Length: 331
Ligand code: MLT
Image 1 (cartoon, helix red, strand yellow):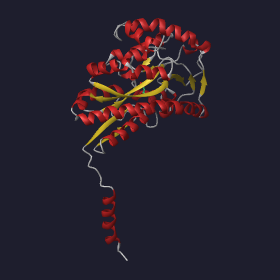
Image 2: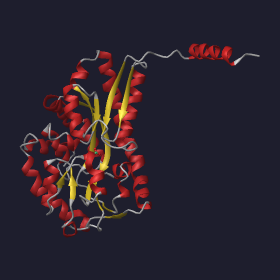
Image 3: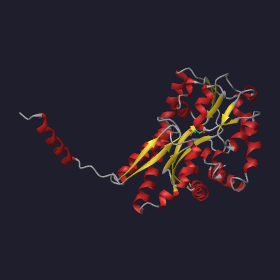
Image 4: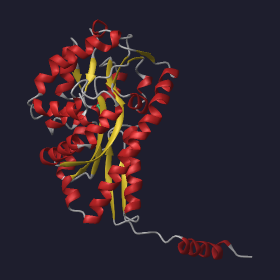
């Protein structure tokens, strides 16, 4: 009969023979703006798993969700300086650093998940990636597709622009989104994403907009009651790598980053299609009241497109960029 002391080293030696651990050469840090459980998290964890596999276990990525590494804007600054490796954030929070990305948040430009994919994975997405490297020091290597940003609030059902009046709505610090609400007749409150849950909880603001999956991951159902099913922006959430960190990697590691990013993007798209409806039902089951905007959203669409688009032609690189995007989308 073995004593415990004799048995232990035998077990350890046997397990070493079965799977010799690979020494991790480098562990990267990834900031994730949302709480665990949403589309950002799904993209990040899928990327981390694929990247580790593709480097034979030599490289690892640790994820820090829920703004633990700072606001989404901070993570861009830190990645640009090379003090942070990766970040996943909403595209609207990159626009202040690289304005041409604002094309993707032009109200009502993207009208479906397929259109979002077409723009991000084609020549438009490629150009925007090159621009963010140039302007913001980060490279987009993957996309989370998160669904349309719906409007939530704690006070009343909102169907018309008249209903919106008097509500204090939080928006990202993004000029295009601020302008959309102004076109709808209110002055929204720009606030960092990392402060938004508390802002809603403490009633500093009455409402905000984000996709169903994000509303769920962030547990906004605890502090919000009404949802208006608007479709003004399809939420795109890029995975970015610090360009200086990327450049300092060996070619095979760079290749693994790019491939893992592409595959995780494909996964993210499927995840949205499989999950969004379930999440919507779950939010209703939790007591959120979901309404459609009146008259097929016509009033919302007309106001936001006519007032907002021309104001931002210059910052997105000229009207021709919008025309090209529409052509890609077959309009
Ligand atoms: C925002 O509203 O600031 C972002 O869309 C939040 C996010 O990253 O999910």
